[in-house]
Length: 350
Image 1 (cartoon, rainbow, N blue to C red):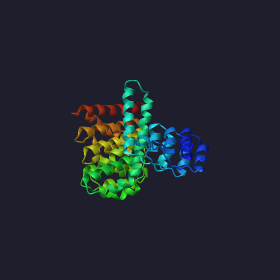
Image 2: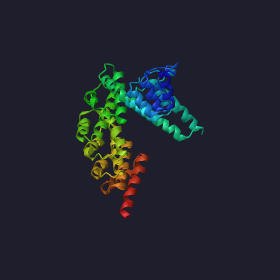
Image 3: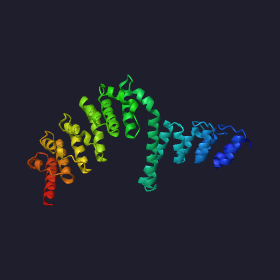
Image 4: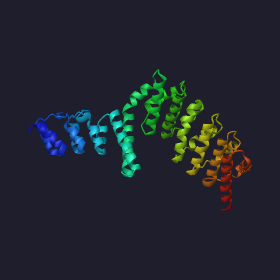
């Protein structure tokens, strides 16, 4: 048996001592078998983490296309060896379109079979999580190009880059290098691009607890940017984030021109109260929104007051306005106002 053959066999079997011996005997770390597999392809296929580490240190080609044109990362991913996948990604392995599409097909099949009872739901969920992990890794490796594309001349290219930046930061990827260009794009002619930019910048500043920067962003931007930012703040409020540092900014958005923004601002305050944040200072502003010309805005203002009454403070000053809504033209408004009043009354009895 030649040293190359010894190396390939040892890598597949998980015999680290034999791998070392083969390399010491002159085996080519990137020697291939009849199917173009290297020792790294074999070790990844069978999940041998120590051997993967040793081969990478010895200069193994992390992107070798072995049998069926699979890279070591593909070998490990398709076999479900998550630790090896992590090793290879840390070593610089690239997440290809083929890998993502193949894992997506597997997820789709598992979900279909879950519905028929042939597959355990946990298995499908695990592979969905793995797909998200790979997609995040792909966004991270593509980040330099995505940032460059933010300056593209074509609207579609900028739009796509802004969307991918938004997805990247939502998945916890740092986007500091993109922030200057994102601020320039708050004035982009395309509204969809501006909305994604507003979301990405808001997430970035929320994570950094840069409350003043969020206030400045909203103050200097149009409705599209604010809409993107508010969608993030709603999610953050649901998760219990303490953003009392930008409470004045959220209050100002209760009277925004856009109904969607007024709606989201009220929801944000309601979720904040649900998570115990003291937003009682916003009761007068929410009370004013009970007279909003749009039924949806009146409903959400009443909902926010209900949440404040339940979790935070007495909403007695809003009671007359809530009572006036008992004859509102909208059934949703009447129902929500009634719930807020009932919650307030129940608190008074205690």
